[in-house]
Amino acid sequence: QVQLVESGGGLVQAGGSLRLSCAASGLTFSRYSMGWFRQGPGKEREFVAFISYSAGITYYADSVKGRFTISRDNAKNTVYLQMNSLKPEDAAVYYCAAKMAGGSYHFSATYDYWGQGTQVTISS
Image (cartoon, rainbow, N blue to C red; front, side):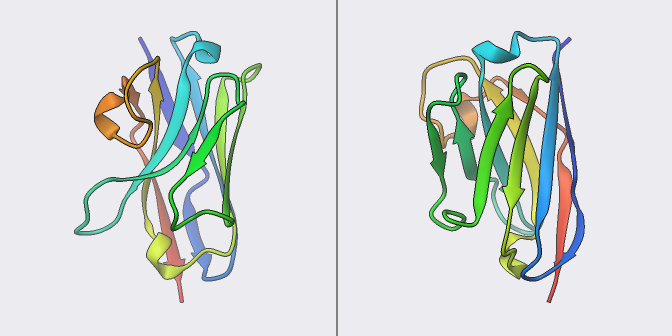
């Protein structure tokens, strides 16, 4: 049974930082590319960041480029999202997702497995 478990969310002031983690089990993690998505209140789920299975390729949404960094540790079956200079508009539930291959990295439908999400709240 595949499980993706996010952690690290919480309440932070605008301008602050958080690091999200996503621990994977039940799959050969090193074969899966990973993505982070988020869904704010009243909004559709949107792409945030992507990292290839080998960590050689990363992509970011324009809204987070230069502030967020995605990374992974295949030995720990974990993907991370370092979020700096947080803004009120970054507040959302953040989800990690795993995809084997194929399809565009920024389309949620191309991902095979999803976590339950972790809440990020920004105080201004």
